[in-house]
Image (cartoon, rainbow, N blue to C red):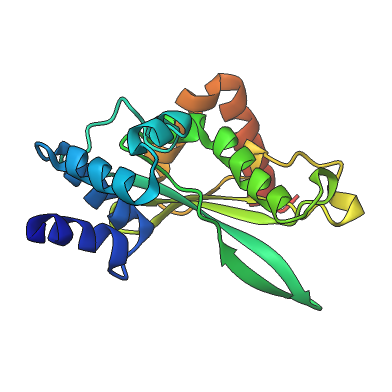
Length: 207
């Protein structure tokens, strides 16, 4: 029990990021018998099977099943909900939705579904589909540096409702430029890549 408490303390109680929590739980799951111990305790206190709960909310929706996380995770995605507070003032609320992976193109190919999950959270909080507030999505590397970001427009403004909620041409590259461009091409094909580069070029020209 002492060993198990030590294993669980870090992922559940220490003040570290959600990414660290996920890593610690994955390591516990890989430990022989570790997951069975957690499941037995979970079922004892809740009366429900943790494995059964996972089957209804599979971890593969959040972590690329093709990735090997033995040596950690190369990329993570997080999102911020911009909630209007006053004139030009916003609360920045971190959404609990996370996405992890070791392949940037795989992350990008799953990003639209991830964005839909973020919107579903806003709707659960009482927002309507036609007037969702703005969300900022950021992809970071293993050192926490921004690679790409995407802003989904605030649809509570009428002028934004005709714009696509998720638009790859609005990507902003912050670092790892060549890797990011290659990932955009691989994830969205040549057509998507050229659409992004065309938009980027017009911004560079100041048009």
